[in-house]
Amino acid sequence: MSWMERLIIIRTLVVSSLIVFPLLARAEWELISDRNDLELVHYVDLQTTKQSGPMAIYRQVQVLSQGPAVTHGALSTQALYEYDCMNAKVRILKISGFSEQWARGESIAVTPPSGLGQWLALPGSPLGQKTLVMLCPGSGTN
Image 1 (cartoon, helix red, strand yellow):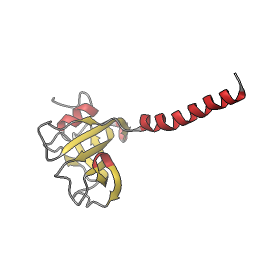
Image 2 (image 1 turned 90 degrees about the horizontal axis):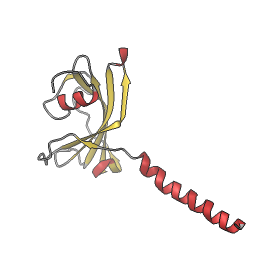
Image 3 (image 1 turned 180 degrees about the horizontal axis):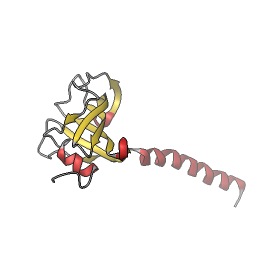
Image 4 (image 1 turned 90 degrees about the vertical axis):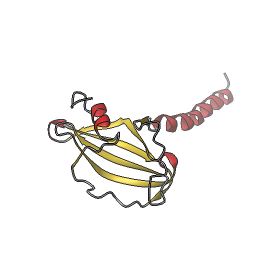
């Protein structure tokens, strides 16, 4: 094999890796909303789940929300939620808005929900008990 052929192979491998690796790094969003809910759809990226807190009873996970009910001119939001597995509570640690679906496009300032950072009772939405059970097996009733 000539040095020119080797150079072409190396160049092809480098270009391929520049295309493939960013695709592998993307989040794998899992739908948690009811498929019939067209106003606000929620997804979680279970690959981002981290344990934290005393005795590792907290779980942090990225949540993507999109649909007509997303406010402040954003088409989607991405938030860091933290769930307390022992006490069945949730809090939002940070939230960002985006001009396009799937947390893409320009960043848009969104008004944080009231109680940002405070522990709250689980909501009646899929971000409540359904997500808690996914993140904290054995944490309560299904």
